Amino acid sequence: MERITVARIGKTHGVKGYVKVNSFSGSYDHFGDIEEGTLVFRHGKEISVRIEEVVPFGDRVLLKFVGYDSPEAARTLTGGELWVDKKHAAPLGKDEYYIADLKGCSVFFGDRECGTVIGVAETGQADLLEIKTPDRGFRYLPLKDEYVGGVDTKAGRIELKVDWILE
Image 1 (tube, rainbow, N blue to C red):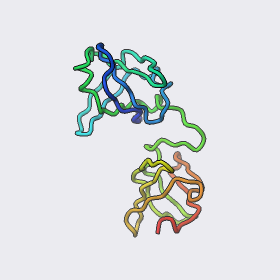
Image 2 (cartoon, rainbow, N blue to C red):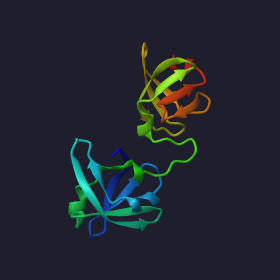
Image 3 (tube, rainbow, N blue to C red):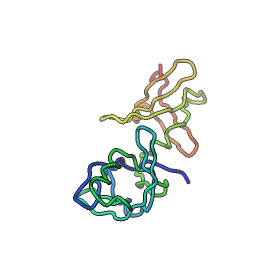
Image 4 (cartoon, helix red, strand yellow):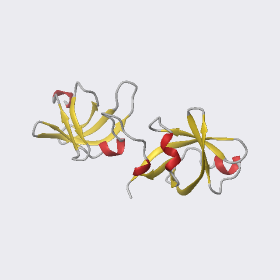
């Protein structure tokens, strides 16, 4: 099973153990299909969870996890990232990519390999691909049409339109 992170658990809501959810994709429609997952916390702790109920909450959803039946119990889940089977991720639109799929892609200018994506920084104007270059260390590449000619995550290949962007 290939896993992907879909959300961060927010504050509790009400007295029955519901929690607010912050979807990384901005979409909440796909949460109704999720039955189980893993919550991963910054300090490395992981908890397997089963979703008991998904409740619409404005343009978002509330989640109720099995065994977390009070605000005090549910509060222990706040801050955890919800990892699920990739089949439950939000559907992608044109020219959209999962960050997990961009990591590890090789960046090419023509036939020359210029580096490998090791991370992605989400910014207001464009996502920045963190590239480890063979001879120059680390560079950031804006994921914008001016610089990137094509992205094929299945082949693990990103084509550059210009090579000076990584100098």
